[in-house]
Length: 70
Image 1 (spheres, rainbow, N blue to C red):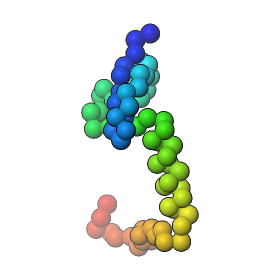
Image 2 (image 1 turned 90 degrees about the vertical axis):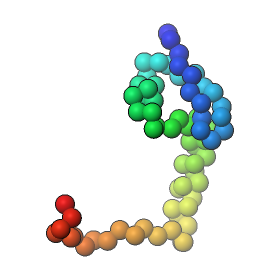
Image 3 (image 1 turned 45 degrees about the vertical axis):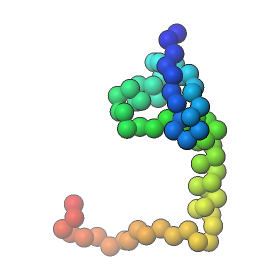
Image 4 (image 1 turned 90 degrees about the horizontal axis):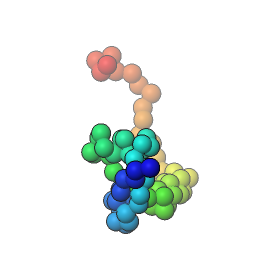
């Protein structure tokens, strides 16, 4: 199998991923997609869940429908 090297944008760790995997195809096709290693991804996910469960987290979505915006 051919492997592709991808560098994490946060910790600069270089990982080898399978070149025929979906992630490798997305990284090749869309250059704006950033690669995160497993450790950084898990850390960000945990901190996001913790932040959402805090009492200071607010979502600013309205239920109003504007007929001019479609």
